[in-house]
Image (cartoon, rainbow, N blue to C red):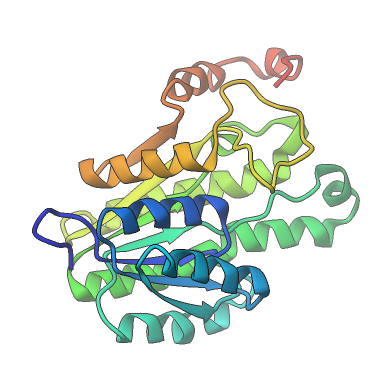
Length: 251
């Protein structure tokens, strides 16, 4: 349960080695969150992430979780919720893929879609049901501005995020009035390990800036968060650009 000041006491990060997930966990631990679950594939990186949060004073547990194994999501995540209430679930896993490779190798494209969309649908529904059963909590879903309008340069990734975004919005509507809050976060280009080596994009951001926006959005119980905020206006305009013109834009 949240403390007397409304600060979350417990956090579950799906995608435990995610830079945005870790940045968010650090911020919430600084605001008195005491229990953090990091769900991800067992690895030295997951263990290092857990140790880094323990140094900050949190009780940290890791749980083996794979987005590509939806048949196990209910069992694995059910064990987390059986240990006690979770105030915030952050769905932070995903893969960028390689557009050229994924176009040439359909099974590679399917893996991107299964990770970013199918895996998220499965894990999101399992967590939503658990949050609803406990009667409170927030589900934060990391979407992307890439899902607002598919670009030639990354339409496979963008289409997976478009599906995730629509799913999260619908889930939020379905849970309205239950005590469960769903927040969709739409960052622009995030400068991180996942995007290392890619050309910089306008209005790019960092994991720490996204984490601050998530923390602020949780306090306000926002339903949608853009990072940075100017992207709301930019994407609103781009959605209405005719396709013949959009194809020629350097985006």
